[in-house]
Length: 171
Image 1 (cartoon, rainbow, N blue to C red):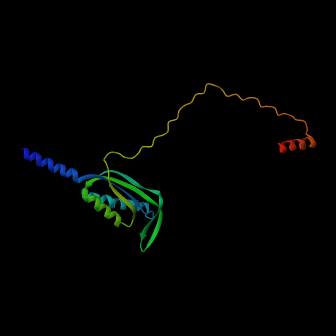
Image 2: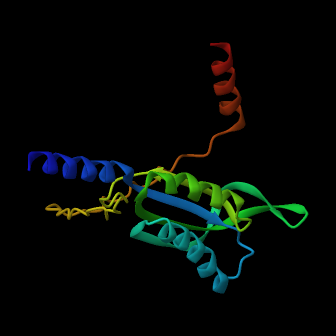
Image 3: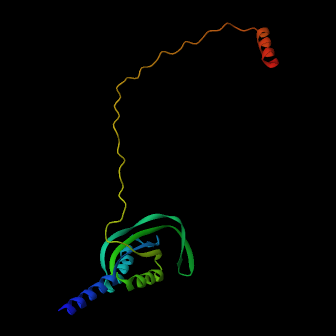
């Protein structure tokens, strides 16, 4: 009985170690029509399902501006793209799937760039917090002060002006 329990426990722990949580992030080239995006994403999902993986969460591809232009081979020429459809899939799968999925994504001509990495099951996206506004109550009232009346000066003669300038320059 003890031997059977140990055998079951070791089999379970091996399966738990071999099955991990992964997330794949990808950029799809923008020349693909929005109607055909589901085919590309479906191919990624199909690869995961065929290998025995199970989905946890998914972010649908949305067209975003890239931080810098990326080149992709389309036919016999290279085309630079400054936009791409970004999407992601979080899944649980055996360790071997991650390497296989990376190779499949590199070989797919409709994928600009992708990354597969290990993660946790919990929600990891940052939440946007709205700034809290404080209400400021003023107890005093703002009163306008009377404007100072401009001083009216007497006209200055040229002789007085020349004398004042000479006094300033000689000091």
